[in-house]
Image 1: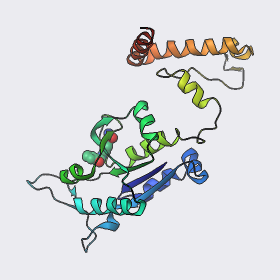
Image 2: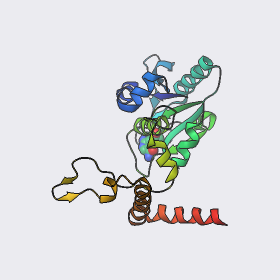
Image 3: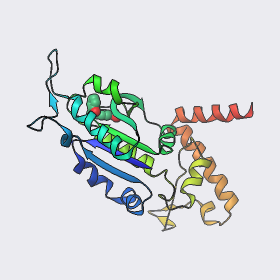
Image 4: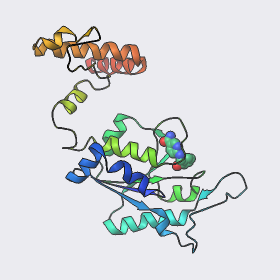
Length: 236
Ligand code: 4GM
């Protein structure tokens, strides 16, 4: 799949997207993530992309023209219209379920706002979906866009090392991960649970599933209640 990030800070995005698992996934061709500088599309001779709000008040508002032309150039270049997502604290809060749905799209465009926001008419004209990464305010939409890219990238075929990562996630859907251990077998007097050293795979799976249930109940009672609900729905 392809993702285009529309931003005033492409270098900030590239710095993150070039590293680690997402960086490798891009090099491998598992996902095509690009950045587009909104400022390159302004018609203002001084390169301005924002102005004071009508009606007065603090801060600056991003003007519609540069963002609109930036998105149009992307549509023309690709001969299609990607789904345009605006990252904002007013959006629907991102969940793993939403990530799965977005990961199945062929092409997404992510609009990063800055200053005090974006002219409402631009949002009405071209934005398909408004998404928030949580109930807090940041200085720009870049970090939320990068969070979304990371979450969507790891769902693409070939990005995670292929083995258990995926199976476990679907098997224990809606539950927290069980605890993990590596060498040494005893560290500062704390031993790794015996069952994990037993080599008995059925027992290990059962123990891990039980740990997932216990952890979810203790740490995230909301997720646990939803999990039980869904399990019981399935029985009906
Ligand atoms: C206000 C309007 C997203 C602020 C539009 C963006 C938090 C989130 C911004 C904007 C943001 C979030 C920039 N802060 N919770 N700041 O996903 O783009």
